[in-house]
Length: 411
Image (cartoon, rainbow, N blue to C red; front, side, top):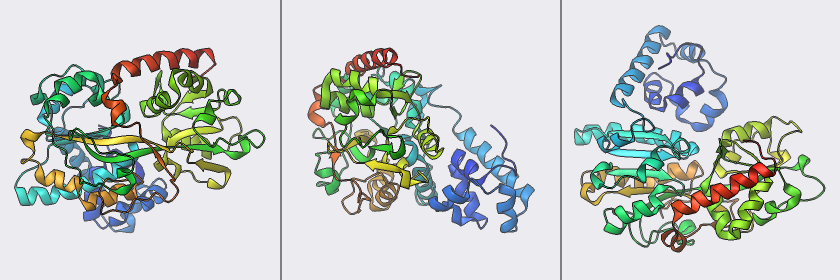
């Protein structure tokens, strides 16, 4: 582990080690639990400056931070990418969209404190970003056949290997899991039939994908109004979406395939310039350079990070903002053991945290922050249950990458 020192920014420390927020709060720095303060002030504020403002001994505090990190890494002495088979040691595994990870960790840390006191027990959990595991953990899951190999709770994102044929046949068809969604769920998601009709997945939230254009870089008066519009030949090599090293986001590709078939996938590949992480897209947009791509498919959460919104248009395409699901699997055999944890994850308090972070919740008691979102596009359960999703992904990837290379896309 890299040692924390006085020159590191508050944002860097709490982004890399969100569990340290508790320590900051205990020493008079509660303001950093406010995400807006952390994101605006945190990158500019060095640890030594923050400590001088609250009269905390610098050397002792830094030693405490490093010891807390060391203790935490001892408890979590494996990474999922390196040792996916050790997931069975966990009570809960959570693979989350980037924008959801930090608020989730904060909420979990606070809940865990109360849980440990009341239950005289600890939650053995591992929370990681979903984006890192498409080629590691999810590939591994295609080979798992025993329910004993899984944690009691798995939270995951996107249309991943839990929708593949092997997992359906080995697990979903045998009713191993318990659906804890309320009925009806929050109307924003009830209206798109988001609930799993098989009662296996508990749908937690959604990562919404929208379109951003840099207006001054769009030629003429052309403005895409729909997802279909960006497939036009005039937009060749002008779009960026999440991707890296030949992998592109299935949360985008699968809905595009459903809407426009494999021909639509070819056209989307031709429109694509490159793949980036959404945070890199925001930096590119805010760079104000005139040699960057003019169009971006990105999570709704990240559109709020764009500094100068006057030069961009955030479009909710006529087909709807694409819904990339955040779902939970709860083993029936462990349901009683983890009831307090799942009650929290499905409850109003966590629902409000999710909604505030712009990940709409399924909890019906919470008002989602969707004032700018006119409609949602969800591929639907009929498609997911009646399609060999794993094989379809391979077919789409082959077609997409071939066309992407032919038309000059940049890996």
